[in-house]
Image (cartoon, rainbow, N blue to C red; front, side, top):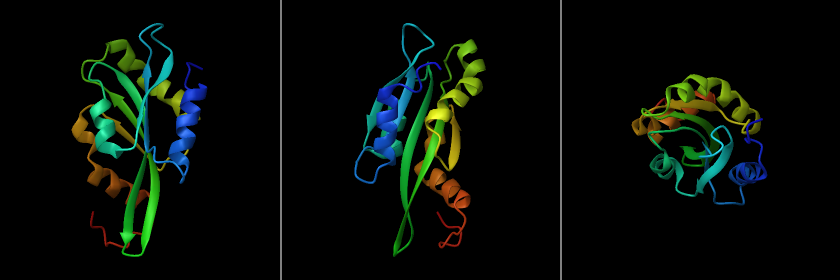
Length: 146
């Protein structure tokens, strides 16, 4: 594998999955040298909007994010999303290999409800992602409202 199963990535993944840690996203990028090795490039506690700030328009990157939302006044749901970021100015060969390499990363970051493919930071709108998570999660107690 290309580094996706490194101890740093696995540890960050477990933190995001834990209810006892505030970390709610991680970002995996390619190391500058050698160029095919995946490394943990960032983690954070600020959700999807903070994650979006870290995305590099010249890179292909993979992210895992914990999303919490309310179904109604009494309940809170926690779901996870896997993000494949393909920056507009990423190298052509890197873009071409993204789906194959994403498969390797998904073997490690394996528990998620939806996959989000993004090439513009606007693709990571939290409201839209919550709508997709609600649809993926079955019962929607808000009658389809975001």
